[in-house]
Length: 395
Image 1 (spheres, rainbow, N blue to C red):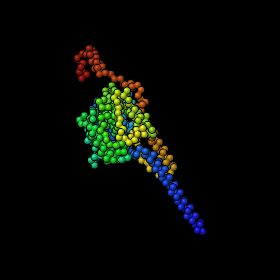
Image 2: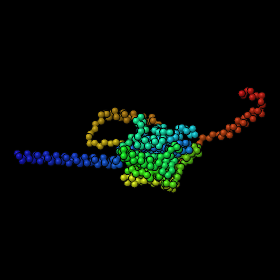
Image 3: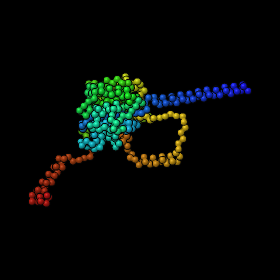
Image 4: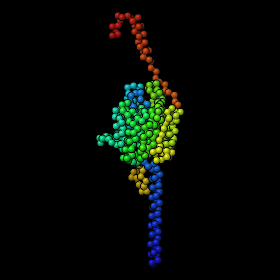
């Protein structure tokens, strides 16, 4: 009897050890899955896109920023996680021959203004002070949520800037400037306040590389369109609009991004090669010494795409909805999609498909001199036929 009791206790103890071991293995497997899923250490993405230039002749800078805005939205970053700053409204400029549009290609096939652009800071709101306040979070309590960068220590942030610059500065509104030291200190404040996990800084301006020379905070990767002493050149002149539509570096970066989808495995090393000097004329630069990960292990979508918060669990979740209700709801969603417009803002014809297209034929309008000459001819014929005395029948 005692022997059987001891055997029973030993069996119970063995079963408990076995179950504990199995539980540890299962928990370890779940942790490995979670670690693999969050391999970059971030759970959310943000983008701060800044155009610092005013006036019609800087049309390309607005087009640069709106093109990047379109790309990050297409790859999954929602408007709620994008802070868009445009120093001028080119779509409503009286010199715009096609109001409510901003094109990034000379064939005018790609309207990057679209119908759902949410500009958070516009016109004279785009200042050095407001930009630094957005980055550091030092904004008044009354500021709406759409104008806040609500990032945390698990956020990957893309910061894109374009405008006119020089050695160590970038101009805002043609009236003030931000220096590379001020920008570096703002990033350090962000790191100290745990406002980012990793940060990608891209700038398209003359002598752009000078803007990241003073960075000293960890986990920052930086790209620039030109080296110190070099100009960043424009691209795509359009005679109808009368200005250049984009800058060279941003144009080729966006052409590269058009081939990216949310599941792409393309890494940052590929982005470094998109605009060699033979295409950009200037020499693009990048800095990775502050970044902890190897760029070849950093996916493009770690910054240009978006991740969703996922909780891995072993519990079984029973859905309350009946299968028939779900099926009818699915059919209703399909009908709604069919009624919607077939061409959406983020699904327009990609840049890669329109690079080699021929320009569209423009509508013919008679020149102003032709109309004036025609009226002069009509008046001469009238005078020759009827004379002055019949003028009273006209006026």
